[in-house]
Amino acid sequence: KTIGTYRTISPQIIMMWSRVFALVAITTGSSAFAPMLTKTTAAINPALYAERGDGYGDLLNDITETVGNTPVVKISDKTCPPGRTIYAKCEFFNPLSSVKDRLALAIIEQAERDGKLKKGDTVVEATSGNTGIAVAMMCAQRGYNCVITMAEPFSVERRKIMRMLGAKVIVTPKADKGSGMVFKAEELCEKHGWFLCHQFETDANWKFHELTTGPEIINDFKDKRLDYWVTGYGTGGTYHGAGKYIKANRPDVKIVLAEPEAAALVDSGIATERKEDGSPKETHPAFNPHPIQGWTPDFIPLVLEQGLGQKLHDEYVPIPSMAGVETAQMLARNEGILTGISGGATMYAAIEAAKKAPEGSVLLAMLPDTGERYLSTPLFANIEADMNEEELEIAKSTPGYQLLP
Image (cartoon, rainbow, N blue to C red; front, side):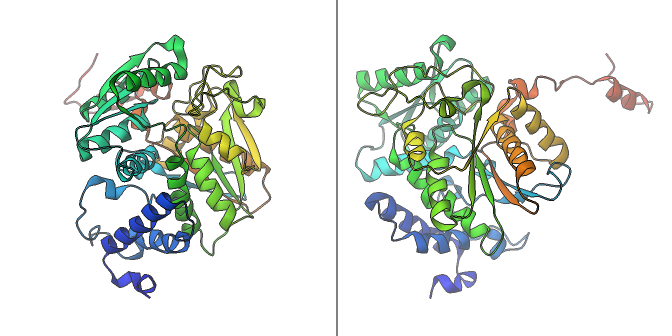
């Protein structure tokens, strides 16, 4: 009865009960609370209870309460193939601007419930950047020390953001690839007794997406057409958890999985050799360097492998080398949407799937993070800081205040 009248109830009370259901479900592994969670996550959407200018609602206790419930935005005909409709789920609306905020919240809160963390402890993770930023946020808020291992090729702005949040960033050599940063994190934890997040192996990762991301999508498309859900993978948590929930509640929805053409690990059919804890033993033989930061490390994560074992996806799209960059730039120019290379790659996959889909099809693509995290990467390589010739001509079109070369 309470949920049925949520429009008249404080959104933060609804948020509180939603978190209670999620915590119980994660702790027990039970799906019994999924229906209640589904209703409450829908209820949190500010569009249901507030107009612009009304304010968010009650005051929040801390930044972690803003994680999740990200908006779904329609893509215009300038980008979408004719006769089809594409939407984007904008994960950069999370507080630290990426889908990985969900993962960090899930791992830290699970560790707290299990008694593995107390204030003053040190949390460690290997990351391409987004998870590290999210973990650093959680550690700053909860009072933990944070150490991040990160391979050399990933963008320097990510290192700076993590350090601004109080983390120590240990950079590993480019030659050691993504597995090198993972092995370094393991070494540090073994040496110092620190807590390792294990983002690539922990069930807390995909379960949180099953309890939040998946229900958000189903709720936003309640009584609406949805034919395809499109995603890539980093750890595989979104694909596994949200994909599982979508298939359970809307089995008619086709799932499209994308990965870099240069690093077609899933498509190769070759399994990753693992240690006892599920982490990789070595680099996958199908891996080659690619420009999509945050996607497809040089191994198949255990979280992803478990999702693949459930045969969740119906279609597969390989992403050509620079397609993610070019599509992200197109989204910025055509839609005013500033997403990263992984978001561009996912939208490329959605556009390709839409071209082959039946007339009238509706697709939803995940946009994992913000483009602002890629200033030193190929995404901005052709974006100049200085005025170009056209801009100089505009500047000279009036007589004053000219900064000419």
